Length: 346
Image (tube, rainbow, N blue to C red; front, side, top):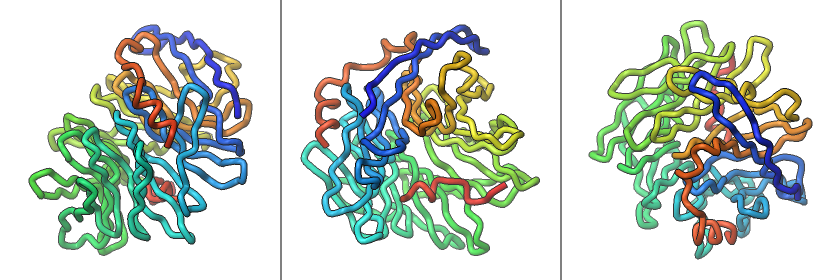
């Protein structure tokens, strides 16, 4: 397993002169790893190849990455983590996905063809089984349906139990959806094209995702108070996946030359995360998926050509990160990504 290392990054950005560090989270003994979610203690959940070459869910700890129990599964992915260290994702048993919840007391596996995508601070989980659902006190509750929506899934849930995701319309296109705690459901629009998908929501109800343009490309968006904002791109299409309570958004975009690069959207500006790295850092940050209250960002990048999970931190915000304590110790003890990938290629 790779040793953790830190590189101080001195940058000049639109918002000032922050000093960033980037941590190579290493792997599980295999060739690649991806960080997908990070809680406010800085603990990352994601997946990587283990020594057998299979994909396995992990959480980060002070020693690197710890693989989460597979149970009877052959592969697993982790997509969400909360402050208590509860991790949610999928395990694959006989080739079928099973929504899975990892806690300090073990793992809970739901039925076949289910997916778990996010968990809030109260431990409520959202995902899909052909229909968007939440898991409350261990019980699966399907969310409301809409006329004309044949299939749906939840991808994000906030502290007030607002769920976001998408649904498939009768014409085969996908549209972003919001399920409110009062039982109502809303179908979102697009950015001029035919499709949209919501991937995350913060505690203020600000929703992020991506939507198609009239020209066939897709751009990241945020939506608050009913207004959808096009976040632009670094060249061509862009896709937003994570948002924190400060409204900072992360995702990835394609450059004009076709290269894929991770971004941070803050104060009306989309920044290429690679622009925050010094020359010759050895890093190419390709995807960002999660961001916490302190602005720590996780995703996947290439370090000296090797695909690996990373955690990027602004030391000026370290005071906002609580000590991991018991949560980190508990977390250390413990293939739905296609659904969150763009559904239309540009």
